Image 1: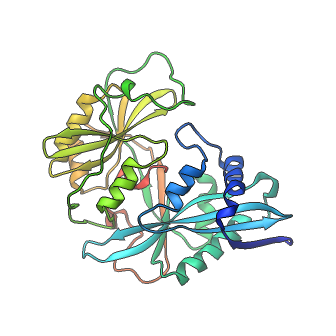
Image 2: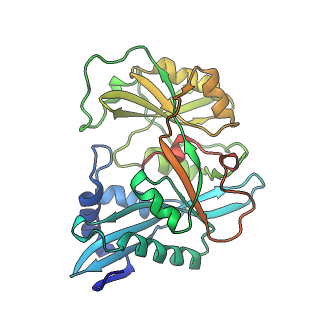
Length: 317
């Protein structure tokens, strides 16, 4: 760490300065506005617990921020791993090339280990991926994309700087509601899907809106999105005993240019979307999953076969 830079824990009074750093370093979109509401939803109101957040200070200013967002994963044997996701890492452009990213991350690892965290995982971009590997992360594998075109591809590009209008994506948009009921058995490391988690994840986000497309005893939770000038309907989650039926219902309800999703190989949801006509995009890895265990865990986390994930676990929050 360069001289004149110190690291300390986040305090609530720091929030305006932290948001300024995030906007300057990462930018924002219509769906992901760097607001107090979004930051609070993610880091304060998360049902898994309050995030570990560290700041770098220099010259009386917040120069960088490092957040570890708590995220519990269940193993096939029923054990729960107390994990964190490395998110919202930013160094203000005025303080670049001073080692702030790595210093904050290593300090956050110490905090996480002291707090009893079992593992850190995340999906870094290409720019930061190499840095994580140098700090002890290991590669799990690529996360691809499964798509279903609707043969209604737009002839005119749509604006990406405004919130998506659900009426342009779904024939009869019905907002997602808190969904009860037990989750299926984990086939690998799987997010603990409690009713509290589902309510927080799909009904309380300040700007991203989720909608439910029902098919008898199953449902697809979908999110309208603009990508590269196209209307994309993201299938974030499939709930219930018949994921194929839910995926077909989402496809039939869609007014978007295409549907996009991802589920782990071997999962019922992956089989369901394949039967519903979704296909993988060759040679396209939208994300790269990496992990860093902080203590011994009961399975090999560095293979995708050990993970049981959905789009909702990985899409940018």
